[in-house]
Image (cartoon, rainbow, N blue to C red; front, side, top):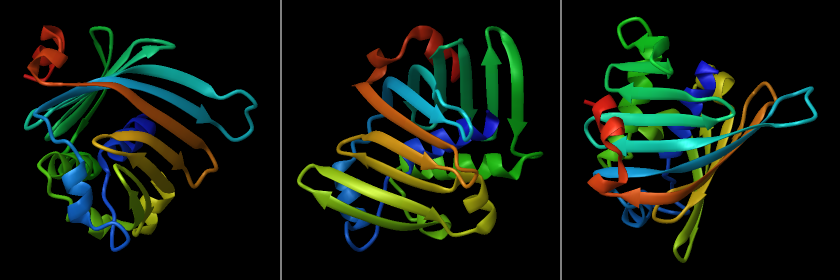
Length: 201
């Protein structure tokens, strides 16, 4: 579960590509609002299980502060990313805390996330082999991890979108597959509730 949260968040913001669709072109297409919130619908197909696991919820991204990933169904669960830590909440209880001092992967994930939010996509070139295309206002991109350890954890990613990332497909090395659809995008301070803002202070 912890790995799935990390993969989903990394995938959400890993929107870039190489020669077929220059990084500069993708950057021009992607909106970079200070605050972005929306809905996610996730389908996870586990190896050996006939029925997929379905979940949905809400996310908010605030530049310079962090990310909230709030699962609403099938049960409430909130993941909060800040620069040096990742905290998973179940109600008012802390279910999991990952600190960058103890978990180097936290710093890597958060470094990639914040560089993307700042419009600096160069760091992804060291982590992924990138292939993509742009057609009109729509783009598609595939990311293949360069490092064996990262490839083992993440597998391959495929994204598509326009001004925002709209779909993410994750094929894990284990054979598990995850599809995420993002929708109902809202930007600006009014997109986030006061409670959500307080959690990122």
